[in-house]
Length: 525
Image 1 (cartoon, rainbow, N blue to C red):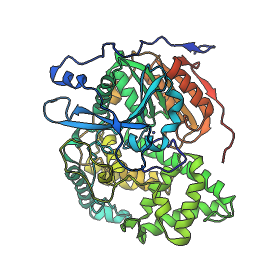
Image 2 (image 1 turned 90 degrees about the vertical axis):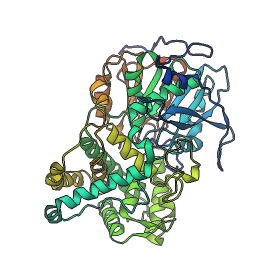
Image 3 (image 1 turned 120 degrees about the vertical axis):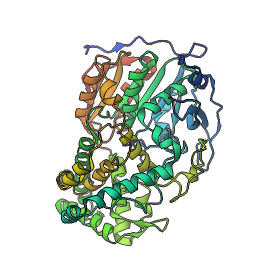
């Protein structure tokens, strides 16, 4: 899931002493790594032309640009894509760039940077801080599944599934077909393995011989894949809110539902202590009220800002985003009060919006950047499904889905009565799509790179701490773990201790001892 680095809702996962890590010098004028294939190496010759960012409300000191990458690295002459970039320039003696990925999958970097870029100003003494919209995301050839009319709506009655199992599978296939139709040629090439190769093109276009990188949530998966593909081009890599590299989507979905439910329970406990809480002052009853509100909106939606039906699952998506940071809880409480008391969705939709308007998109397949207003509203969700499916080689048979749907649904609903259905649908949406890569599960391990910093947060609702430890063991001796004993999704923006240690590594190469920890910051709510 995307890391929320701002308190404002945005439209859109050793040694006893501190040691310095010897890394290759990063600077301009040094040779950049490039592939030997001529058809691909030509993409390494480009330079980014920076200029004013298009659109209203963009920070004046943020610059925007683009890079061109092959649509298909296996056939690099068969079309190209443009990827949107944004940066804050170094204010001191520039040593290179740090590329930032905010997570998702499906999180657009440029709008997040516009609202949360100030979090990284401590790095600009030495570095340009650069982010991007990955392929298929935001302005970079955004994928879509349409206006929502073709969304899956699986029957709640198990008897109906048994009466018409083929009907269930047909709905899933129709949804997959709709996503392919609305997304264009980028869809088969949207996975993390391709996005990692894009990272290397960006690195070269920025003039860096090594990749310095700060990845949040899903961005840690992207960083780990890069380390496996380009170990000799790894500079200083930080992975915050560490994703799993091995668990199948089914298990990821259950873990995500459990984490989100725990965060929701903590929110309702907090909310019930406030007389303004729209769910009352009984925390247990407040939890039941949330379930009833979701069910009520699924049965009888209210009009959204765009006039489309706002359903219970739309509410689930919005609440899910807001729960990533406790600093967003007061805003979430007010937004829920507006919904419950006035029937207005305006405030709550701000947590889940993706930009654009329903069904709008630029001409599919031209590979150029689209305008921000033409990014489909469903792009974050559509891209998340597409990337997760592309990264997972497992595809259950139709028989396995229909025979096991009742058990699977019960397991997800037990994990979370609020988030379980949404998480299950995300997993089922891979049915009917081509099988994903096995590269991540089979080959991203024992990387031969300089040491990298992995930050795991004990109370993370999206990426459980055990994933940090599992991924560290998998990556091998290069991984150094920092244990953040706080809560919230990722640690860089929520913990002063984590922020300081990450900056020390990126700026000076200074790593904390493996297994060291950061105590929680004082309660700032």
